[in-house]
Length: 449
Image: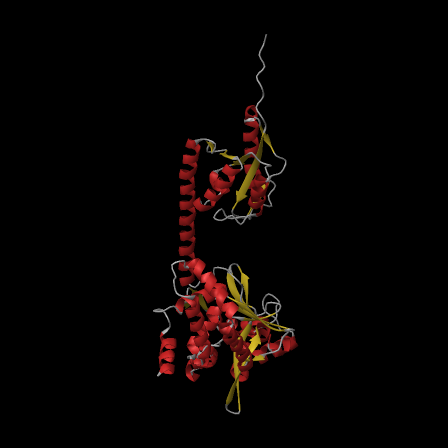
């Protein structure tokens, strides 16, 4: 009597295909098609092992193997996690990844989901120990090849730019591309020259942005000419006929749009009105809430200053207002003195509220079990800090505010302060004997004398 061997359980096989460039993907038969066809043929040759191809293919056309930000790969990993795939088939190992770190992450997922990996041309199966060894060796060479290729490309770009050759990137206003060369667009070039001339006379990108929006002038991409766009344009040495590369400029092959005199006049004004230079010239301290103040919808406030009748006024201004001018704002500017006084009042009050200080001390005790300092001592230290707050130097008040506050939200119903829990714990640790800040220690000693 003839014995019938039991058939092997089916193994669902997914073919993954990738190509870095999308230049020839519109051809009737391209590299993706060739990889897919080879993968399916390989699966068909393993029918005796129970291999069957899944209906869905995973194709990434025009994606690098140096990272995992690929739509088809992400979909494949999701299906693996869902238990829809048993074997992953690729034409070559570098089609799946060219990064050892990324491949290690994939292997972890494969192992956890009991999925194996095979390459058509390299006859590697991750289900065996020898296959895993060969995978790591081949992948090391794939990563090495990718890194060497990247270095060659970067060297080529650097050498080309030093020769003044434009190597692509965002096209600046005033130029078009013909035969891989920058050529002047006369209509746009007239706008560029006007921007440089207007800055010398108007000296306000806010007014310039407002005027250009009224006239309907837009950038190369069709977007409004904001303050940031104008400043970026005014710093672009390409308009002098130069090519920039890593902070260096080289004579370019393209024609200049502005003269050296126009450039020098603009840069002299920019240097004079630069915020950093103004702050150093006037001895202005850093704003207490720099980077911490937001509107309810997440728009950041930035410190701005103005002078009138010899007196300086400071405001926290919404970012939209800084980009487009006051005419585009959603939220009004807030006087710095008023806002900082309100926040300071809340900080001082929090330092003196027993239950807040108690919560800080309790959390510090969890992270620092070695502490034996009585809680009442830390409470007294925080109360002392509250009492001498106004006597602290501005730089120390700024440091403490940045340490204790996560963000301050200005909403229709008032102001909300979001505290930094870890910052309060760090402050408590600073206030321990032997670690107290030198300035606070000096103030304490002065008060006792």
